[in-house]
Amino acid sequence: MPTDIKEIDLNAYAESCRQEFETALKTLVDIPSVSVDPNHKSDINRCAETAQAMLHQIGAQAEIIKTKGNPLVFGQLGNNPGYPTVLIYNHLDVQPADAEEWETNPFEMLTDNGKYIGRGSTDDKGPALAVLFAAKYAAQNQIPINIKFLWELEEEIGSPNFEQALKENKDKFKTDSIAVSDTIWISRERPAVGYGLRGLQGALVRLKTGKKDIHSGLAGGLARNPIAELAQVISKCFDAKSGKVLIPGFYDAVRKISESDGADFLKSGFTVNNFKKDHELNSTRTDDDLDGAKRIWALPTFEVHGITGGYSGPGVKTIVPHKAEAKISMRLVPDQDPDKIFALLETFIKSECPDAEVIKEGSLHPYMGSTESREANAARQAMKTAFGKDPAFVREGGSIGAVLSMKNVLGYGAVFLGLSLPEHGYHAINENFDWHQASGGIKMFVHYFQSLANLK
Ligand SMILES: [Zn+2]
Image (tube, rainbow, N blue to C red; front, side):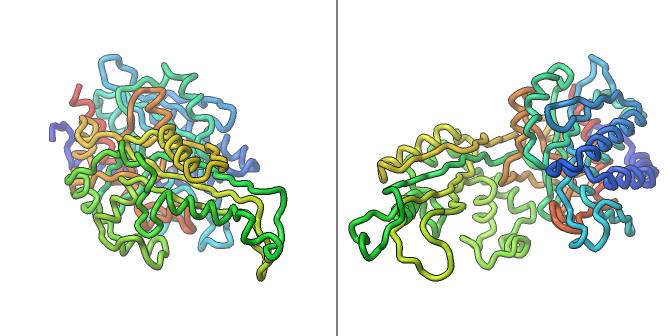
């Protein structure tokens, strides 16, 4: 690859950072920056101040940007108008942790032979620090690039104030490309670079056929049953066995999955068997690995989350319910449009059941980056050089609101340069990170910065 970096020097640099990295990670993990719990508001602020100080320590400019909710930490290393600028997104808020369930104190990081156990170690404080130490190297070695750090403290609660903050600080965050380091490889054996996210459209379907539940001996046979009618409509919306959506036009905008997309999905190490184990599923809709990977990353879904109404206490109560509600959502893929999909759903349900009410719930657009852009190629080279293996390009089945916000406001999609592994326990008990991924991540980001700099 076109690089001026000597691998030996970079290895030595990463090793020389180990102590400092571990100390910094412990400092951050020991602050319980739990965003969902208002009792941790002061910890959130303390985390932001600590992160700001860490940015200052490597010579970056850094500030805390207030929002209506939790602040953002913004850092900038280098400000040369002749250099390209890259913005790296991480988040420093964490999931809650129940100390009773953990083997160690979740907010007192334990270092065990290159393994770092504590809440937030892998999601996302460890990856954030890998970026920080890589940026320090880039500055010390005069890699011609400007690096911007954007650290959010509300990611785990859905980034409610992020887009507004981006709009208010658009000039500050101006960049030539964006990377996000907050995703998980499918297997330790294969680096993964993410490039796509599924979108979402939620809906409530309500049917009211009377004023009150009535006796089924008295009225059954003549009275309509709204629970059963909703169940029937849902069964017409999609085939529950195969998962195939039957709403006319639903698949029209779905982008074809190319053979090379599929090959990369498999290369990632994905298997239905492991998936079943990880998620404790007894069985799945398919046992075929390629079909399985497509189903979670590249195909849309129709899901019923719940049907409410009638009687659900113990035993049987012989009533005919008078109302029912179905809670529905559809995961969407490029190039499905949430508004259009909702309109198709509403029209279809109304045609089957004219007096049903269809209420629109939250929506998110799907996102698709490129596997062939300059940034994607830089990512491919950087992952390969740092971890010794060609990465697989994969997609995420879920949504990351911050990615869509950055695309909307800053005008660039993101490359997902995650460092977390399935065994790191994302959002789970005994969450951990490790030096292999951290040191590899430091080297990977240095190569990524160098590649971007070489492009200019
Ligand atoms: Zn995360």
